[in-house]
Amino acid sequence: ITPKLTVVETLTNNARTSAANPSGDLISVITPGISIDGKGARASLRLDYGLSGIFQIRDSSANRHQNSLNALGKLEAIEDWLFVDATGTITQQYLNPVGAVSPSNTSVNSNQTETSFFSVSPYVKGRLLSFADYLFRYRASFTSSKSNAAADLRNSEWSARVNGATPWSAFTWSVDAANLENDYSFGKDYRSTNFGGDLIYHFSPEWQFLLSAGQESNNYASINTQTKNTTGYGFVWKPG
Image (cartoon, rainbow, N blue to C red; front, side):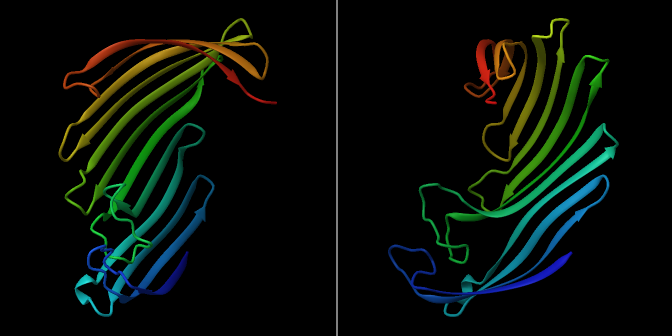
C-alpha cells in the first residue's frame, strides 16, 4: 500500500477550450492518492486511485475536483472451480468524438465528463466427465457519467461454453450459448440471445477447418426481437 501526492502546474492561453473567447490562466492540480498491489494464495488486487483538486488563479468559478481509478481484483473462491473477477475504472471521457478536445484533463471542456465503470464476474470452470471442458460465466456491470447527455447503462450477461474431444482424434467440438441485456437510463434497451456449435477438423497442429451452426435472437435492428439461423465455415491457422 503506497500513498502518493502529485502537484502539476499548467500555464495555458485557453483554459476553457474555447475557439471564440480564449482566456489564459494558471491551473494548479493537487492529487493525493493511493496505490495497492497485493497478491495472496488465492486472491489479488491492483488498485490505483487519485482525487484531483483543480484550481484556477483567474477564474475561481471553474475550480473543481476529478476522480481517477483503475482497479482489478481476482478471487479463487473455491479451489480450481469457482472464480470471481472484479474491475473498476473512473476516467474523463469525451461526449462527442468530433467535439472539442483538451490537451489535458485540467482544461474546462463541456465536451468532457467523468465516467465510472464497475463490473463483477463470477465463473466456474472444470472438467465434465473425462472428455470435455466447461466454462460458465455471469457478468454484471454498471456505467454512469456526470453528464445528463450520456445515458447510464446496466449490463447483464450469461455465457457458457463446453468443448471436448471425439473418438476420432482429428475431430473436436464446442458448444456456446450467451444472453446479453443492456438497460439504459434513457433510450432503447437491447437484448440478445445466441447459441451454436462448432465441429473442428485438425489437419495438423497448425491448421484447422471448422463448420458452425446456431441461432441468434436480438432487437438491434427493430423494436421487436428478430430470430435468425446462422451457419458458417472457416479455417484457423496457428503459426508454429
